[in-house]
Amino acid sequence: MTRVISGAVLVLLVVVLVWFAPPVAFEIFALVVALLAIAELYRLVPLLVAIPMAVVYIALPLASLVQLRLIGGPQAVFLLMLTVMVSDTAQYYTGRAFGRRPLAPRISPKKTVEGAIGGFVFGTLLFALLCTWWVPRMSMAVRIGLGLAIVALGIAGDLFESFLKRRAGVKDSSNLIPGHGGVLDRIDALLFAAPAFYLVLVV
Image 1 (cartoon, rainbow, N blue to C red):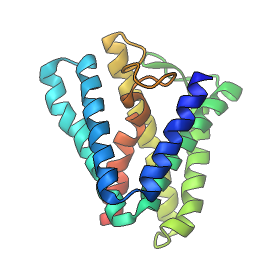
Image 2 (tube, helix red, strand yellow):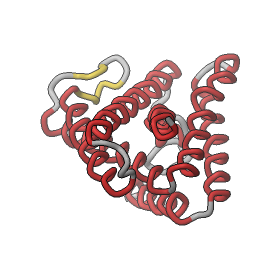
Image 3 (cartoon, rainbow, N blue to C red):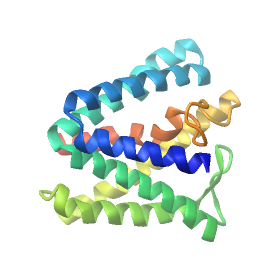
Image 4 (tube, rainbow, N blue to C red):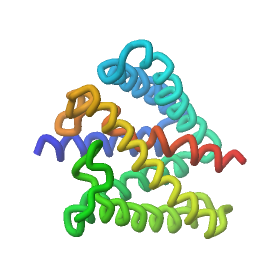
């Protein structure tokens, strides 16, 4: 129940900040998230490694998310987040139902190839369909290709954070969010996917 409640609160907070809040409020939120994520990163890697990683792994991706909202509007950020969320959910349920072959057993034993396929199918489908209304200037080929790339980068981001946690010998990046772990546990996929989406929109 704790996980469900905290998850509902998180979703509500994100919807309000992404869709309705003025840009400055979203920028402050991104800054707070960045500071919390950096604090968690210091628990996972040595200080000398954490300093440059904080810039490349956390600050720049979150800055690209802020810029994405400025150039693409709330719908662009929401599209990215929904794609990652739907892909992650599809991976979980598809993996539970059909998962047989581990995707990266040494890093994340519960992830399966079948689950990843489910994530690619449903995440890309959602992205391609919502682009029709929210980012209509993209051709269908670009939508599908970008949707696949976002899902792939999201999976890579998830696995990368799992790798950091496994090396540090911890289950979650922190206990900040009841039932969900830490901030890094919630944004790991976005940290890899956001810069790619931003670059495509500005080119």
